[in-house]
Image 1 (cartoon, rainbow, N blue to C red):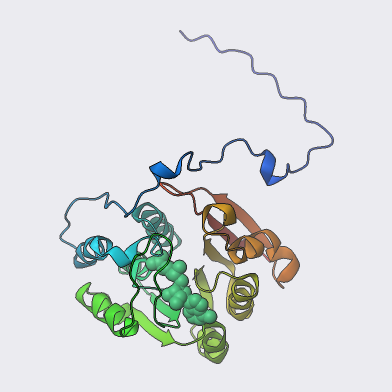
Image 2 (spheres, rainbow, N blue to C red):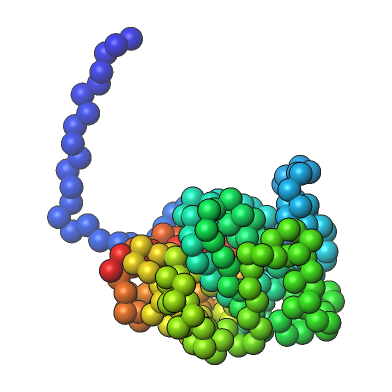
Length: 262
Ligand SMILES: C[S@@+](CC[C@H](N)C(=O)[O-])C[C@H]1O[C@@H](n2cnc3c(N)ncnc32)[C@H](O)[C@@H]1O
């Protein structure tokens, strides 16, 4: 039983290089449109935390699908924030508040923390997998939701174009000690996602993170911006970044993490 097999060091090829994404063999994707969910399924049970119950109610709303991140992705984001323990977090794209609650729920556990949330809070049109839109005051809806969740003291809202508002907030963010974590899920065009990245980068601390949602264009409606930023951060940004590319389930919209290392 105590025998130890001899493990030989592998021969390391001299020409190691990254394969193009198309040759990556493991890539969960929907095999059949009939398997496409029509709503997000809440995975957890009841909780005594108001923000968890608020999230459960949010996911019961038809508007939450598919633009709010899945609960599975929310759990991932929540867990990342819990472990990163950022002091200052920026969120671009709140929509109806799902990601805001997942992030702020984690910040509640961190000693000193705050979330600066940016969204145009404009009207929502009907679209694929969403039968009706929303023409009301989305900022008010999210504010009230965050208040009911018991997280209002942690979240500041900045309605309007995110790039413009971020630019205007730079000095304030710098004065707060810089941004430790940013979650970008707003304008998904190449120009839009790049603008958000450029707007945040000058105040992103070394060691800080940029997280991107919807990084697999052919799985999330053809939006190319988040993938563009994830793949090219080292070319288009001033900083030097490490990158981690994650798959999501039940729909593989994709999630990317950049860590600024220089
Ligand atoms: C995909 S949704 C965000 C979903 C949200 N992160 C979640 O998972 O719960 C994108 C949001 O970004 C907002 N948005 C799009 N372009 C924007 C811009 N230029 N400035 C601010 N917000 C924008 C949209 O109105 C929408 O609320």
